[in-house]
Amino acid sequence: QVQLVESGGGLVQAGGSLRLSCAASGGIFSMNTMGWYRQAPGTLREMVALISSGGNTNIADSVKGRFTISRDNTKNTVYLQMDSLKPEDTAVYYCSARDTINHISWGQGTQVTVSS
Picture 1 (spheres, rainbow, N blue to C red):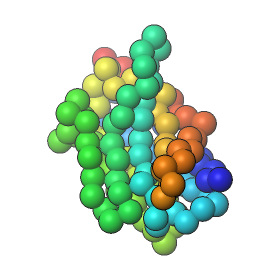
Picture 2 (picture 1 turned 180 degrees about the vertical axis):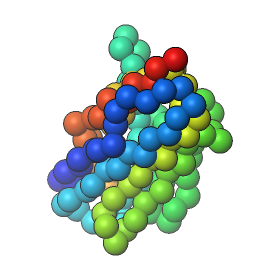
Picture 3 (picture 1 turned 30 degrees about the horizontal axis):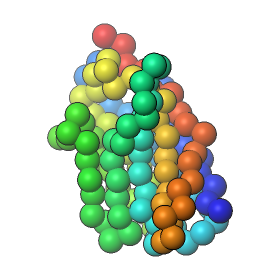
């Protein structure tokens, strides 16, 4: 079982930046596919960015060119750098970890609010 703790959310003006962090414990971090998802009120949770154990990334079209996902296997941490934020990026952001048998763990979420 992987435990995930997100941090770095907050309130920012449109055009600003935030960096989310997700610290993982348990499991073998370097072998997990890590990801960030988000959920705004009244909507389904959607994938924002994924990074494989080998460092390959998959970024949602809605944030491509503005958000960057990265990982530091020495710190068991995955990051989401969010630049040029827009009000529509407002959501609760969740960290995920998918292990080698496709079991997915979730963090508790961190709120990101972008004011116009």
